[in-house]
Length: 302
Image (cartoon, rainbow, N blue to C red; front, side):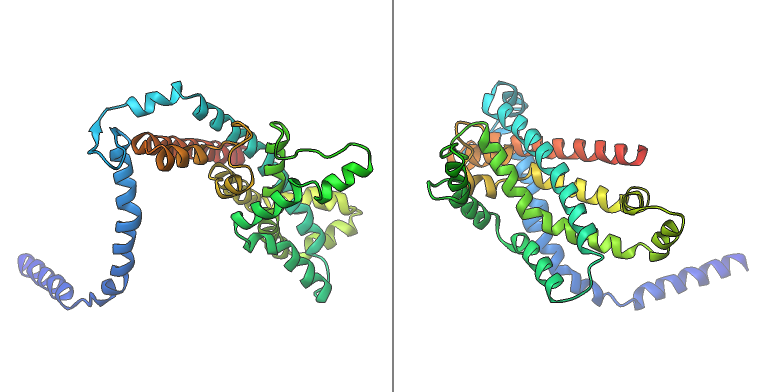
């Protein structure tokens, strides 16, 4: 009887599988095919070519770890890695702080035409392309009639080559990046602030807490998850920066604003060293993963 019951159960399961409607898989099939062709396949192919000497024209020649070892003898690569860390350390803390302060100022405002205009004005750079932002800031910073140089001339400092100076060019790129991204992260913080129950602030005011104390002891701790997201996303964006640098400085003067993605683009698509360029892209991936894991561990422990 036990075996009869087992056979009945197995037959019921087979009948259930037979009668199952698989039409749902047909709806996800197109996106699966697109993901495989345009995402998974290029990732695997780039990993394959990173171990080869490949220039698109000639067949790939296997070279083992040569492309990865070449990184240590490439001074431009080492400079670009240093630059992305400088760029990230300049961008991420500043845009995180400014977006938080703007959110704290704007979130309590009454919903009116002025508040809507202010939010829209701060969000316009976000929806603008990096190329457009780069062109705008190049006009602002790199002409004799630009606003900053007009102010500098009035103060007797004379025209300043913001994009032509090796030390000022990176600061200019950082400034333009913060201007573009701060509106996006401000919206995230505003959403987080709106989720905080007002009773927390009311109880704090009853206990005699001032605005500064409520900000430090209530707002900042309760926005911790948002801050982690802002920092991690901002870091990933910073390591991937290309469009803005390409439009604003082109990686110059010299290599003072050369980023790793910019170096990958130059190596692969200008010099046609595809294998080495793909190896550089995987180095960038490893750097981003390691930095993200470090941030995750630090944010959890603090």
